[in-house]
Image (cartoon, one colour):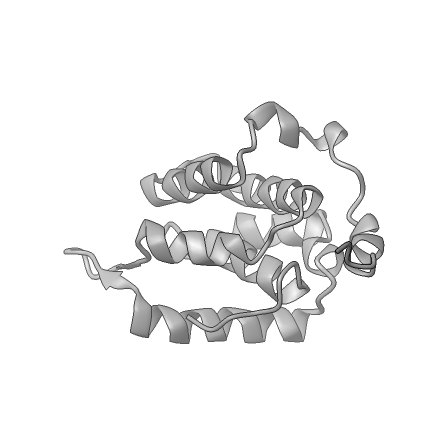
Length: 153
C-alpha cells in the first residue's frame, strides 16, 4: 500500500474510499451521501483527486489484499491499521470516522466488512460511538488550522 502524509486529505480520503468499497460495491446512496454532506470538499479534495485516490486504492488492493472465496478483495486488520495510522490527530480521526459512518449508513444495510472496518477504526483510534455524533464534532474547517500548527518539541 502506498503511503500518504500523516493527516493529509489523501490519507483521510483513502479511508473514505475504502469505506465506499468495503461491501464490494459503491452504492448510489453512498455517492448521494458524499454529495449531500459535501464530504469530498470537506476532506480538502476535489472530485478529480478523489477519483485518483479510488483508482490508487484499487491498484493497491490488487497487490496487498486477500481474495475471499467469493472473489472479493479484503484487507486484513494489519493493512487497515496501517491506513488508520496515517490519521493521527484526534479531531481528524473523529471527523473521518463520522464520514465513514455516514457512508455505511447510507444504504441502511451494514455489511460484515463495513462493520469490521468501522469497528477497527473505533478500536485503533480509541473512539466511542457517542463521540462521533454529528453535533459533537467541530467543523472540518478546523482541519486547515490543525494541519498548520507548529510541531512541539
